[in-house]
Image 1 (cartoon, helix red, strand yellow):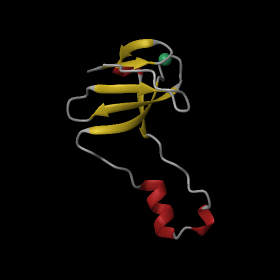
Image 2 (cartoon, protein in one colour; image 1 turned 180 degrees about the vertical axis):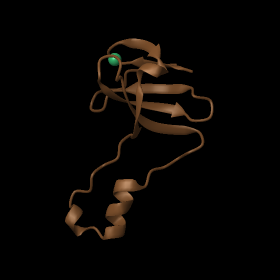
Image 3 (cartoon, helix red, strand yellow; image 1 turned 120 degrees about the horizontal axis):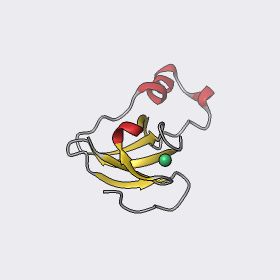
Image 4 (cartoon, helix red, strand yellow; image 1 turned 45 degrees about the vertical axis):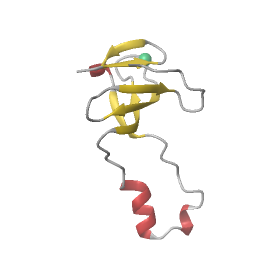
Length: 93
Ligand SMILES: [Zn+2]
């Protein structure tokens, strides 16, 4: 168990949050120009690193907001919590 520092609510147990996938996945500008393999790659292929990972989380049992987290998948240490489109809010460890 670990804590996540929600940008709106402050530190809460991880059980209040839901993992929402890899962060910063950008939709292709012209999907019609992609091959089926390229489109499938965009839809389904995600990194699964051992170590530092950029993730999106949602505070489902709190404010309901989405935000980005940089977390070490081995140690669970959270390096930072950021709101997409805003300047970095700082460390959340
Ligand atoms: Zn919250």
